[in-house]
Amino acid sequence: MQLKIGTALTLEPTYTDRVEKFRCKIVEQENNIIYIDYPVNTLTNKTAFLVDGAQFRATFVSEDKVSYAFNTEVLGRKLGNIPTILLSCPPIEDFVKIQRREFVRVNTSVDIALDYNNKFYQFVTEDISAGGLAIHFNKEFPFNEGESVNLTIVLPFMNGEIRYVKTAGSIIRIIEKNRISIASLQFTDTEDIDKQYIVRFCFERQLLNRRKLEANTTN
Picture 1 (tube, rainbow, N blue to C red):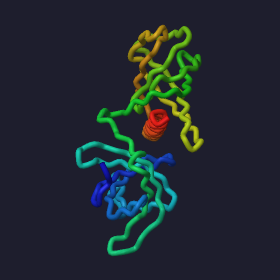
Picture 2: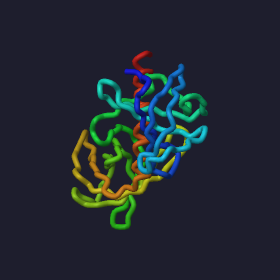
Picture 3: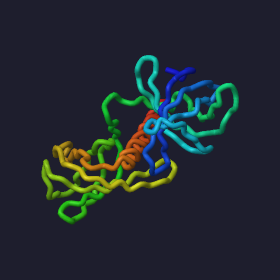
Picture 4: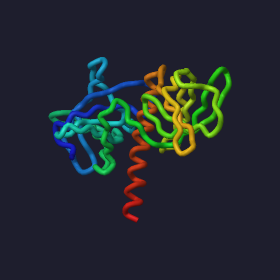
């Protein structure tokens, strides 16, 4: 798998409260820099102006129909027959394969506060995706399968940024696993920007988990 001239990219801003997507194509590549034509906003179909230093999550589909994602940053511009924008390109090892399911589920622990009947309960997740999560119950809980709750999810990012995502959820099922109760919840009312934060968080954790695995196998 490798990036090639003509590969179509979709860019999504990672550090903004706006939900946007831009499409573009790779025109040239040189070492760890890729040159793209001026991107077009997928909603307005208008050419977008990307400022230097802006950071994005880029996704593309390889020749064997597998989707990948990587983090990138605007480095500048180049004038020529085709004006281009310079983007940073990480090593191929830092590309993350995107699962075919709608939402990628990542095993990771994050703190959440659960609001049920105006009482708050604090738990830790077993896994999370943009569509829902699973949480550990290390104490008695008053709710049951099929009930709705309000959630506040704490998302710590690799750059030190912390986002608090608030959403509603429905308890799909509660199971026992190794003497621990685990509840699976499906999000039912998530703002687009909050969903984008969760997708970004899952992507970062995928990359971090893979780096840890590679480090353990080489030691």
